[in-house]
Each structure stands twice: as C-alpha cells, then as structure tokens.
Image 1 (cartoon, rainbow, N blue to C red):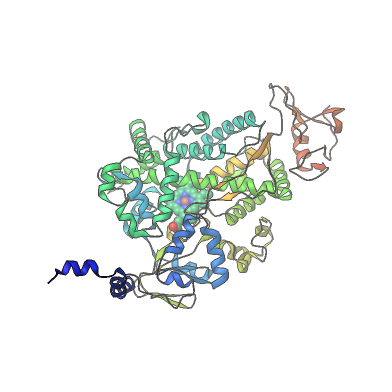
Image 2 (image 1 turned 90 degrees about the horizontal axis):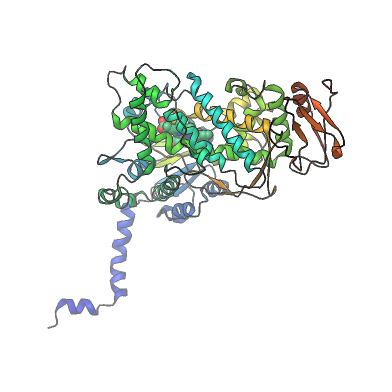
Length: 574
Ligand code: HEM
C-alpha cells in the first residue's frame, strides 16, 4: 500500500482548491461580515478594503470620494466595515460638541503615527491627535489650552513677522526666475520652530532641511495613508516590536521634539514670561502649577504633535491661497486693494489683518476649496449602533466625513460650490452664513477640532498681507492645473510662480520689472513711471496707497504683462 503522503502529492491541486474554497470563503465571511450590505457602494467593498487601498495608492482620495457620493448618494460603503457620509446633519452626531451626547471616538487611524514615529524609551508615545481614551485626551487638552492660544502672547507674533521679512528678502533675490514657491514650506517649518520652542529651525536661512526630516515626514504620511486603509498589516510592520527594535528611535522628528523640550527646559526659568515665550515655555509654566503635572513623555508628545502637523497644514493652506489668487485676477486685485488701503503700513499687526473682511473670505474660500486633510475623519460607531442619513449602522462601524466632500456640498455653498469665489462668504444672509460656518470642516469639528487654528491663522494673517503689499505673484502657466497628492494630507506641486517685488528697495540697484513700473527712492518716496517711461512722478505714501487701491491696468488683466499702469490721483508732493 502506498503511503498517504504519496496520494496527497498526486492529488490534483484544483481538487484541493475546490475542497478548501468554501472554508476559505467562510473564514473571510466571518472576518469581514457583510453587515453593511444595505449601504450603497461598489459590490467589491462589501468584502474587501482593496478599492480604498487602490484609491490611496493612486493618491486620489478627495476626488474619488466626491464622485462616489455623486454616484451613490449621502451614505456610501467604502469597505466591509467602513462608511463615508456626506449628509451635513450627521456632522453634529459624529463629531458632537454637546457634552450630553458625546462625540464618537477616534479610530486607530492616527494611532499609527505614534507607533510609526514616536518610539521613545521602548514604547510609542500617546499623541494628542491619536488619543482614543477620552480622559487622557481631556488631560492633554487642559494642559495645553493656553499654549495653543496664539493671541495670548505677542512674542511669537513679532518673531513670525521677522521671519516673514526674511522670506520676502529671499524672494526678492530669487525673483528673476519662475520657480516653485518652496520658500512657503520653509516658512511653515521655521514658523513651527518659533511657535514650539521660540526659535526658528533654519529652513529659510539655509534653504535646507536642517536634519528635521522633511523626507521622513513624507514617508511617514505615505505609510500611514496606506496602512490606515488595511490596518491589520500595521502590526506586522511599524507596529511590530521586532521592527521597532531594529529601526526604533530613528524618527528624526522625534529627535527634534526631544531636543526642543530639553532646550526650553534648560533655558527657561519658571515664571519667565519674557522674550522667549513659546508653546513649550507656556507648558513649562502652567505645568508646574498642576496637581498631576504632565510627564516628560506627554510633553514630548505635544511638541511632536505640532511638528508633524503644523508645517504641512500651514504650507498647504498658503499654497492654496496663492494659487487661487493667481488664477482669479479680479479676486487678487480686490484683495490687494483692501490690504493697501486698510492696513496702516508694513508694520501692521495680526489684529489689524484679522479685521480685513475680504482677506478673511479669501482664506476661508481657499480652505474650503482645498481642505488640508484629504481623507475621511474616521470615528467608531458606539455601543448599540446608530442611525445616520436614514440607515442603521451597527456598533463598531467606522464612519466619518471627508472634508473635501462636505465643503463642496452645493446645498450648503451654492450651485457654484466647485468654483473659487470668496464673495459667497460676504453675500450670504446671516442664516446662510451661520449654516456655511456650522458645516465648515476645514479645521475639523467638535471636541477633536484643530487645536492649532489660532496659531495657523496668526501665521497666515502675517504672511499673506506682507507678501501682497510688497510683491506681485503670478503663475508661470496661468491655466495649468497643479497636481495634488490626495492622501492623508493634500500637498500640491506644479505651481511654478513668478514672484516680483512691487517696489524697488531703497539703497539697492533699481530693478525694473516687465509688469510693474514703480520705484522707491532713497528718500523713502515712491514714484511711478508713466507709460513709455517718459516721465517719473514721485508719490507720497498716502498717494501710493491710493494709487495701488485704484490701480488700473491697460492691455489685459492681472497676470499679463502690464503695458500701461495708471491711477486716479493728482500728485501733490512734487
Ligand atoms: C491651516 C492649518 C490647519 C488646518 C487646516 C488644520 C486642520 C485640522 C483638522 C481638520 C483636524 C481634525 C482631525 C480629525 O478630526 O481627525 C486637526 C486636528 C489637530 N490639529 Fe490642526 N490644522 C491646521 C494647523 C494646525 C497647527 C498649526 C497645529 C499646531 C500648532 C495643529 C494642531 C492640531 C492638533 C493637536 C489636532 C488634534 C486635536 C484633537 O484631537 O483634539 N493644527 N487639524
């Protein structure tokens, strides 16, 4: 008699497959029960997360989610246990700010950040953005609330202003050739250094990464984007202790965060509210008064959280503002007029800039058109399940809204929601405006909304008016669409710009630009060359502001070559 193994060896593979397939299907079924079969979506998503994964790999999450909702309606199945919602009424339920009806908790979506990049003293740090435990989250928020308030101290504002001046000087030197405005990203990194530790990181001055790990940050976010779609693989990769033993502690951003904390703890004295005030100085001061002070790990978490979020978020938003302004000449000109007429001078404060209504509308519209986060802000359906958009969702379902989907909702923002039109924020009735703001997800919503909004707005309100007072920018290829990497974050590329100083700097060799015929004289006066540069007239500061406010351009709109530039005024100073 032949041994059993021989029989098995001779057994055709196809028969084996036939026998085992039902077991395999049963296993898959029990792993991923199609309990969301009543939710519309592509049939494949009932059984697998593969479509989600492919969308992420192709970096098309925002646009894909928008078209899925256009096809399937306000509630769409994205995976065997995941649902995306576009129904605005669901926002208050999922991200509730009502303490009697707690918001749904976060999924491990962000937890991967901790396990991937913050392996510290043998374990991952519990980050604020990732925290799933409600009381731990509340503890970190309480301890850092005053540190996140940008308006509470004037020192960072002053330092950010100095940094902007440094950026403008750099732009002036680079203005001869069109290029990607990467100096914006350098600004965003240095500004984060000022906010977190009270001093710039040195991106702008060196034009280099300075060891922070810009590349590492991109790799971390690529990894997170992918594993958040198929979370079980994480425990075999960066979530595995063995992998962390091999490459743990490698994260350069973690090293930076630890160094920042050490620097502030060494240099700042408790009670010192002087020149060096920063996020960490503030934490150090308030922490000493707590009954249960934050631990070293928790403080590093707070620094790390800002370093991984703030530079990308602010950089992406500044790029959006510049891009949409350059593509919309009438908006650009209206904003430039407002900035030149309403602000007192180059030394304007953030409080002054905050009062500019059109600037505010432009920023809100840029954030609406291009939210910084490109994925569903995931939450878990609590015990007992819930009903959203008329459909029952069982406990444990992952659910959420992608800001890109909600911010293009035509019912809220109008039939032209796909267009960049800041006027919509100014024309709306008070009720409509309230509705538009209520469903504004650009900074998230409810208890887990962005904690750095104040800081981000301070940086944006310092940068944009300063740039527009002294520079003119336009896209090298005005009708060229940029490219957007639509994953976790939504960074843009392909926006080469010509950025030119509007006025020549006193004491420097005058540079005459093809599109701008102003000049600032050594005595501080500004002048304008009349068409054809036959005569030169000197303007005082007030006239200059009036001139820019009423500036007319012959021979085409903004972004084209200015042949004749003239204003409505009569020059009285010369
Ligand atoms: C224009 C700039 C920014 C935008 C559009 C933005 C957007 C967001 C959004 C949408 C969320 C919610 C994520 C979720 O619900 O899952 C969030 C959370 C957060 N952001 Fe921002 N952010 C910006 C700048 C900043 C800055 C500058 C900081 C820090 C200095 C920061 C710190 C945080 C933190 C700590 C959280 C987590 C809050 C929590 O879980 O309680 N953000 N941000």
